[in-house]
Length: 186
Image (cartoon, rainbow, N blue to C red; front, side, top):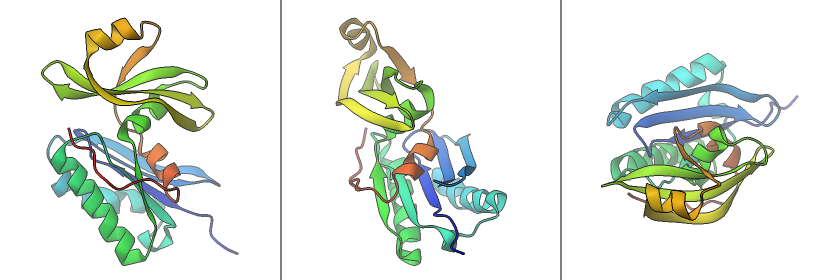
């Protein structure tokens, strides 16, 4: 009997280290969203070891890896992408890049809802994209722009601004699809 597919999602684009193991048959097996500030490099490998331990799984059981490609911090994106590439190469797995703003929208939007996922771009600005969630899928309605919050709220008064943690479950769900690994730095 063949084991169900298992996918890993990683995002370090924000001060949060977000990781998740997900299977289409069983859903989320383990996940964590830890505020680590600028400590991604020091904490990612122990966090992944703990994730696999809690799920009673081994990295060799993976079928693919998804990684958040931003927008986000230069260092955080490099750490996440390098870690994902190292695992993917070592385990001979496909790797997929995923929009970090879509991963934020996934965790906060209700089914059928549309909203503006944002990340701080400093100096009163945000990186923002408009997303809609239908079922377990998040679609991009309007691609990422840089704007100040007031302009966004005036331009889209019916949409809520979402500022939160990327959901690594969404990134794990994207593993195996075709997403660019090109990082989008802040």
